[in-house]
Length: 202
Ligand code: ACM
Image (cartoon, rainbow, N blue to C red):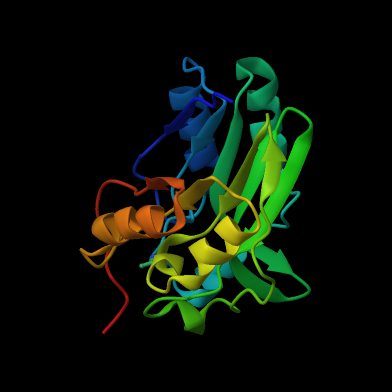
């Protein structure tokens, strides 16, 4: 089964989801693929203070899923987009898989990095692959790369393509993801972002 995958690395403007969604749509519209992976927290930017992150968070089936569903209807692709999710007062560092039918899956990052636990609750659910155009695809988010388990669980459940939105901070991820792919016999699309944000960490 052939699946054409792509990625978009862009520079999100911190705290401006409307602008970031417009920018992603504008950049993606001319391109055709089956599946396109965008960065972690692509709608919000990464280094926001807790209240600023809460202000731009949304449900999994919120404005971002709606806008990407419309984009998917025009391009024929599906998209994996990182966003801050608000559910029952809790914030999660999540990613959605959205196609022309709408929201296909959501995943909450389990392994939070640096200052992220000040903002986000870690995901508690095991990642579940989704059948997409004849291929089982899995979603994991950035620092999930550091432990073998996330990729391994997805692979044991049959995923052969790992969609991996990221805001890379440490230099090791690109090599670690090659290891994850070799040890699990899977492919991965790791999408970093470009540009700089003021780091809020130690
Ligand atoms: C990270 O998990 N964004 C480093």
